[in-house]
Image (cartoon, rainbow, N blue to C red; front, side, top):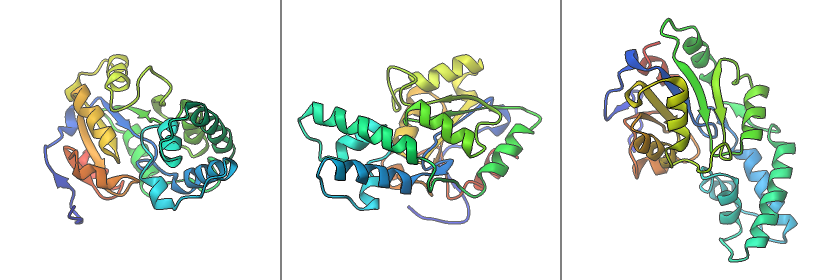
Length: 233
């Protein structure tokens, strides 16, 4: 994927008609790689497994806590082991979710500009991370202010890439699919946008940028501040 100072344009997004802007959380608004890695490795230690390198664990992030732990354990058949490990991971992660996690540079000014914009688009978070830690992180790091909704992987019966979360947000925002954009760092976010019929923006700086080559977004950015021009701020 060619990195340049200009964003890669695949399908122009009509900024002037956007009424709903939906952000993924991990790898999009926040860098949570270190805390997720440490929580996974604490879980692996607890269950007498070898720890994994950060890059490997980062490649497992995006489908929610259950899949993250399952992959880290090597996809075992023992479902009770997976259930116990997920429970241990969530307890540990809730305690340590803000040890090293930070907001990417440029995100807070971007959100401030969106909140103050005359068009007043509605802003939302749709993560596959459980909603409890998602909301707590957003509140602690100053991301919750001005958010219309913050939804997580257990807010609905299905997670991204299923369209249910995005479709719910569209309905609640009274927005048509072509008045909304999903912004995320992985193919899961882009597929969710495609399934819901919304526009998509991929974040090449996130945790899973390699997956954006598999499912290309409408537009690709390389740093959060690129969104300023893209969203006509």
